[in-house]
Length: 343
Ligand code: KG4
Ligand code: ZN
Image (spheres, protein in one colour):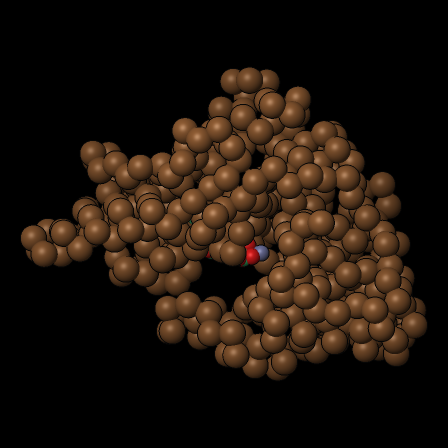
């Protein structure tokens, strides 16, 4: 089957064409980002994101179709596409509506089945693009993005159970909020990873929040307060030079990684899983993936993470979920749901 997949839940506008046989093949993927606009405002202003998505959505879909089939987009959609997949939540309402209403219109006009996809499950299914043959159930799924930090147990496709998640800020949000205060540009996660590597000393230590608690919950707002207070003190003492900034980055990253690794490996052990799948923007952090892989290998578990392009928001992961869980819904029953979670 060939899918047109559409993702527009946050600030990206993305379309991909995928073919699913026993494997999943991404034929084309096109993503437009309004990141430079959000970097100027230090974060995403929902109305700005949606306004850009209205502008980008049709050109992005057209380009993905034309690149995949080397023919005009209308003809390709009519002749070559079997189904359309679209993110219907969670996310920003204005952003979601752009993707969902476009997908509904195309499904109706071209008479194609429409598969609504939960964005969060899409992050986990990004792993099936490359690793489908190697992934074994049951597995633990860890979603670490700018908006979410969740641990799930998957016993089968569609058969999953939520084990725990963040009580306040998400892991990516902690990177971004701390980064903003210490003068890094949005989104700060990638730069914190680079600065952490440059840190010559590792003397600064921040507490890894609720790491000792016997649950699968996370909390990162206390870490944010600790890191910001530390930085403010440096500022007062006029010792906030680049080496001190690097040390804050190292300590922030370590506090976040330690708790993610510990609870994820324990979730796998307690649920008799030998496999862990990670997804979401923070899984682009190689220091985190190396640390998790090392700890998992110590107890004979394997870790899968998507290639970098499929860690952050993209339409290919939405198509991958739709291909592995093919459940079309009548187009008129598909609605954007910004509060969508697991259930
Ligand atoms: O999955 P994503 O693209 O969007 C959401 O669904 O939220 O994730 C974006 C998040 C941002 O918070 C960004 O700082 C973080 O992923 N991120 C990283 C890295 N690359 C992206 N965090 C830490 N290290 C990275 N290398
Ligand atoms: Zn995401």
